[in-house]
Amino acid sequence: MTERREFLRQASLLAAGSLAAGSLEAQPLEPPVQGAWDMSWVNRVTGTYRMAFDTPEISGGVCLHQVRSYLAGYATVHGTTDADCSAVLVIRHKAVPMVLGDALWADGVIGERENLKDPVSGEKTKRNPFINIPAGAQHTSAWPDGALDTLIRRGVIVLACDLALNNFAGQLATRRQIPRQDAKKLVFDNIIPGVTVMPSGIFATCRAQAAGCGFMYSV
Image (cartoon, rainbow, N blue to C red):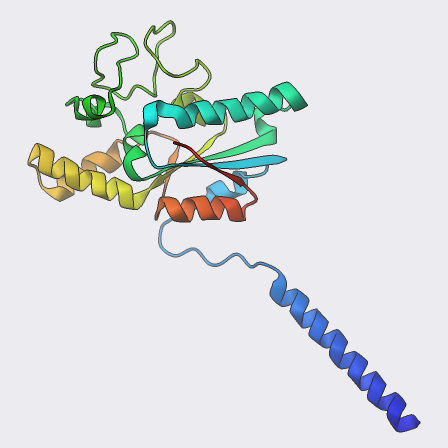
């Protein structure tokens, strides 16, 4: 009887140890950050409500409408503030011109290709039509509180795909017949303030979901 009691005691200790080890293994650990990637944005995903917007196409700036509608909807229904609703806008693939300044739009190629109007003149745009929109602009497709730079000021986290930016730089080098390194410098020097570059849009979207965000495909 004593031997049986001792056997059960040892078995229970072993089981407890296994459970404890399993609990430790199940807890997610933040992996170390390699290189110079700025991951501080993850610490800003703190809202009660959290959503990631995956944006591979410009599509007339529909992603901006969706982010604004997300913030406005929760404010209307739940009385939230912007701080209560974390929004992560991931700009990738063909949408990357959205996060670039006017110098990259000046030749009119993007405006022509995407059929986008200048917010003031209504002509095919030769500037980024999603930022610095003057009050009273008659041809803007963005709400006054829903332009890209306005959303950044409201606390929306905007992430851009490094792969897509480099691909755009390659296209720019060919189009303007300049060295690729010069084109790359031009692209990265003209990223809109407040935008954080991530290794890829896929990584950015997945990381936002790991931080508790829901997912919306913005096209």
